[in-house]
Image (cartoon, rainbow, N blue to C red):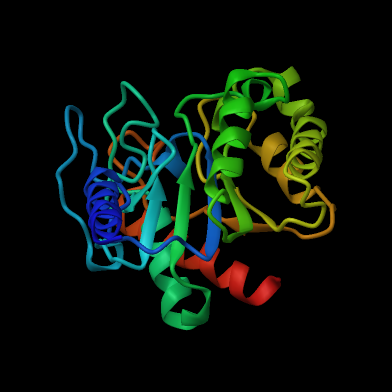
Length: 259
């Protein structure tokens, strides 16, 4: 019996050392971050590299985790989409300030798990059910709840790429509604809160059409936070670091007060 007990202790110790999640609590509140580059984060990114500046609203915390590319929980840090939005220069996004604000105002929701899924430069057609990006997002969302926890909302910032071609802009509302309905169906969460960001910038001339489509979505539990007017980086496309921090706080306010 003593040998069996010793063997059990050895195996438990090995499991703790081998586990990449050792010492971390599993999150109780889980949020999916999806869309394109302004969600994955370009705050502080210059013409060549990220400046490496992490504002206090975005610092790491044992109470804020992220689901890494290997589907394991780890302490979140900027850039939050590292190893997710591949082959890009990443910087500060809205996710960390969102999580800090939620915890500060409603600590009972923690620990918080963030599931980064955003990919820069993507059109909404690339997020349609059956596509690679959609499949990866749903797979990661399902993996996030394997050890418990609840998916509380999807945070969605996408549409800049759909302003280039008029037909894409005109069909944006239809495609977005279908996307929301499909995600809710596949996650078996028919009333899952969905918070989208109204476009601040565009890659083409049809931003007004896409913004009208965003504000025209009338599905239950769908809210919009408007990024228009937030300060931009040198490229006039991506939000700068203070803007990303502010956006995260705005998203948190919507989640805490609209649902």
